[in-house]
Amino acid sequence: MPWLRYLLYFISIAFVTWALTQLELASPGSLKFYILLDETDHYGTSEFSPVEIIQAIILGVCSVIMGWVAKHCESQRPIGILFGGMALIFLIRELDYFFDRFVVDNFWQVLIVIAGSLLIAYTYRSRRRLQYALARIWPSPGLTLLFSGAVILFAFVRLVGHESLWMSILGEDYRRVAKLAIEEFIELIGYFFWMIGTIEYAFQARAIAMAEPQPAARRRREKRRQDAKGRF
Image (cartoon, rainbow, N blue to C red; front, side, top):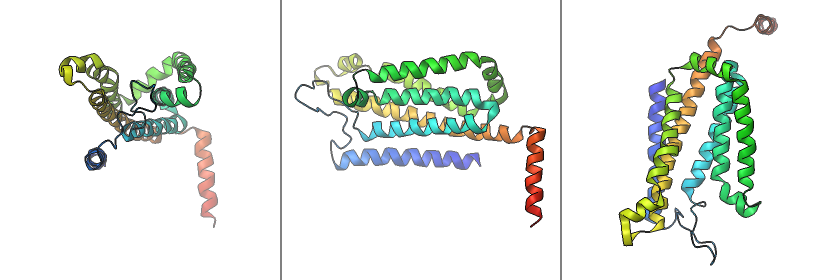
């Protein structure tokens, strides 16, 4: 039942947000939005924050779900691969700090170029199938929520989270940790929208796959299996 799923989405988001805020209130600094790792670090990082960890987990889940769609819902495979690949690229981008620090500097950029090139090549070659897949599933609540998340992540947060904006607003009272906290919480709600959209799209893709007529060979195979079960 869709209304029950949306109620669970609301409860889950409210609970996670409440838990994060209460964690910070109970132990100031526990959200780790501004950590200086050594004396030469002048900018600090929020990469060890529970908020950023949750964001990475969400992207990993979205990538797995879209991979499932690509594998089990043939008519929606181009969309599943497109959005699954995008989630993977965003995950690499979220982990850029760890790639730079623990692997090789700018290694994450190489991974993004490789993954992005493969994704662009696949999308171009499958553009006609992608059009058919979109026509078959649209209008789609899941894709609408994915679009809403993309607007928050790639337009709103990039403008509102800009450091010069907060330096202008706060003036002498500017603190980098405040800017990072606002930016990360806005990104979190964008990723929540992205995850809900991915789940809803997967439900819709599954319904379309189940409604599609099965090839004759598959029908005969399923019939043989049912007949074999009925003998015992």
